[in-house]
Length: 171
Image 1 (cartoon, rainbow, N blue to C red):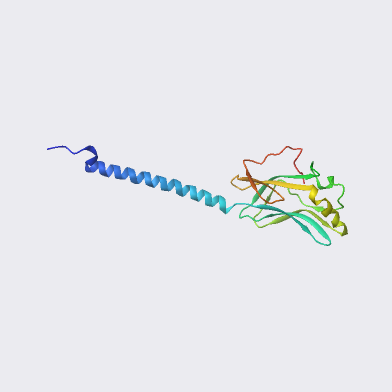
Image 2 (cartoon, helix red, strand yellow; image 1 turned 120 degrees about the vertical axis):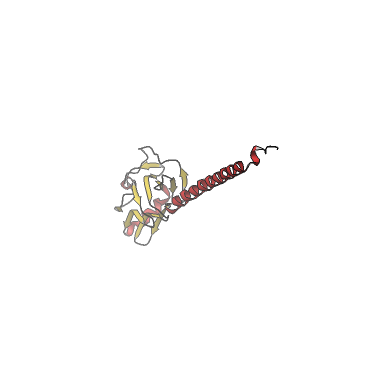
């Protein structure tokens, strides 16, 4: 009697079937974990938008988080006439105003802050200098995915939020 090839023996067929099922199960598990991680990141994805508001008696800059998760604002950078400024009062043309802290804070989803508010008849001064003011923010999600955005509201992904202290806006 002739002996069957090793791969034709019943116990080898069972073993190879078990191995194949294990490999398929592992691949499905890895893919499922990848999808779960992507879903978790998307469920807390911040999206900051910088806006300007103007009326007859007021002018303001605002930042809103229109994403699904909190935005951890790492830094703000504001320039006036291409020169970095640390505080709003470094712009000599603007009259008295109200301000809020914008740098290094957490902005919850669907919330807004107004870092600069002016109410009064001289709001046209702000319109005159508005094009000379550039604002950019670097922010991260709770999973350390980071973006930088400016007034164009087109966030660009970055590896991390770093800025020279001379360029960091302090208010």
